[in-house]
Image (cartoon, rainbow, N blue to C red; front, side):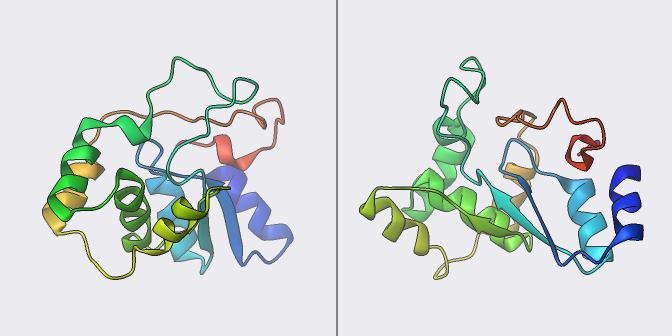
Length: 148
């Protein structure tokens, strides 16, 4: 969080766009953002498109997670909708990417239900911690590599 604090000393920040999904929950960064009136915006909120140039192909796939699949079945929703709703309920803005019209419409169907606290806790306790997009790892002052 030290690099994040340093950034705030130099300019006003309204939002930070970072990778965030059920496998990269960003708890500490979210707490920091909320305490500084910064909106956390999640890219890759349902995981990654798994493009081989960006993503290690051996990483686990959010959309295939058995815990998320079970919750999705309980609510008669897709795993993507559960992942998006999970982030929204934590106060995180989401920007899912899709070129498929059906999935784009589906991604908007997350405002008419709420995940129960027990389901939020189940997702919070998924033990996998992984980052899919590693473009910025060579930038020494990148605040997004701080502990999450």
